Image 1 (cartoon, rainbow, N blue to C red):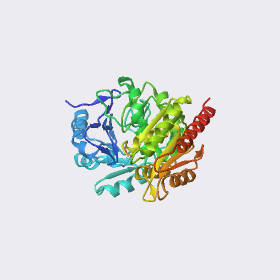
Image 2: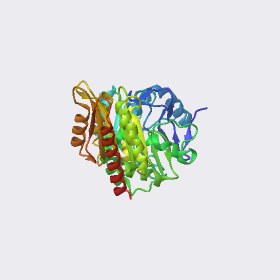
Image 3: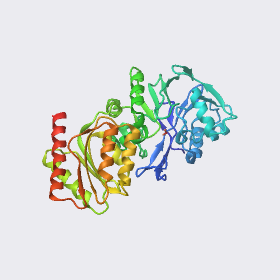
Image 4: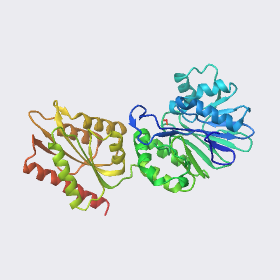
Length: 400
Ligand code: FEO
């Protein structure tokens, strides 16, 4: 018996959970694993929507066979060519040599880069095209850069199911429950946001455009390529995405520091305490050397303010903080407040480069930066507290 979950009588989740992969894209930790969601529509014509990572290909083939038996697979819709979804493509084609692979022109260009597509039967679609499977009707929408240039979404109009690709996805395995109403869905918020901010965040404006493009469709179910399928509380999901894709933030502060011998950390702790004294409640304090950058970025996506501190390291910025600033610039995160502190000795480089970062990314610096020489003096601590005071004041103004 196969672990297959019906979305409707004729649409089945045939994906796989991966609890072994340590790092998504060999970058992001997966303490709660990840699912690769693929869906099979069983109609007069059969269609598979996306595949799974190569390591789960056997699993996928067994599930397809459990649903359609000896019947052929007629279509394989490739909403997204990234190998976590196309990894089983060649094995599916080997098993079903007459399957028509549905994608855009860009889809096939990219598939060609990853796979031997010599035997592939391409069925090219454009934005707005339809494909009838019998009772089920597929409608294709180009949604470029959510998350790669070829990405598209497929809407099945009989059931009202939007197969959304990476959009609306989440880290975390599906441990028995598939739907939002079968899971403690609020526990997914953190991993959904970490997934969004780190994977799709750079393309937030494109994701926003895609949501607007699809907003009038009679959507009853949103079936992403990762994580829960949403059918009961779609407004909650859309609220998350509206906020994240429009850089809408909450009242709160991420305090992040790098520290070799505790001097920069000492300032960070005082700043965090002063923020509490000034009635700021949502504070996340991170040591950038310890917490993976993906978690820090996820919270920066949520909160309006960042207070960042770093020592000088070889006349430059302490490397974990340098990585963070590099990522934030790459993602073009907008509309944040920033406060800066740090330490130096015979040379400067920490605070200097943080200030350069703030200028380059265009964030509002709420107070003069403080830079201690070696251990912070009482005066330096007072200056650090000024940053906390100014940040709290600015946040209270913005979120009365
Ligand atoms: Fe889940 Fe962009 O792949």
